[in-house]
Image 1: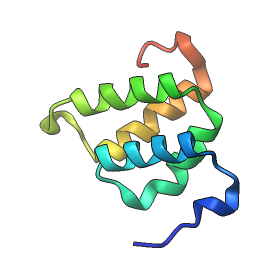
Image 2: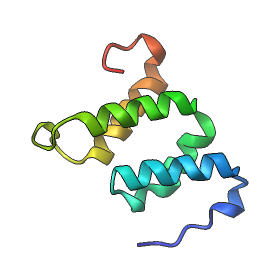
Image 3: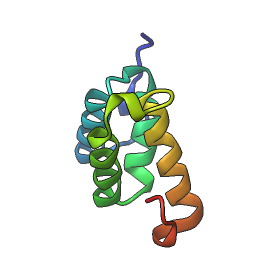
Image 4: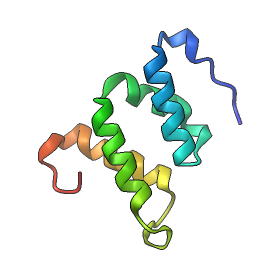
Length: 87
């Protein structure tokens, strides 16, 4: 696993905590830099909503990984906003 210096990007403690929470719940530490970016750019409530949705899906229904699904849904939110039916 790569070491990532989150202090060099001026993330606040709340953003860092949220990114760690996402990384931990998705068992995806390699994507920590991406989750930090999401935490800095997107509403935290929406990220937690997507995270809870992804974590509630049974493992057998996930095609790749929970991290990949989370990233896909965040991308859909970023592209389409609140009106996209998959969010």
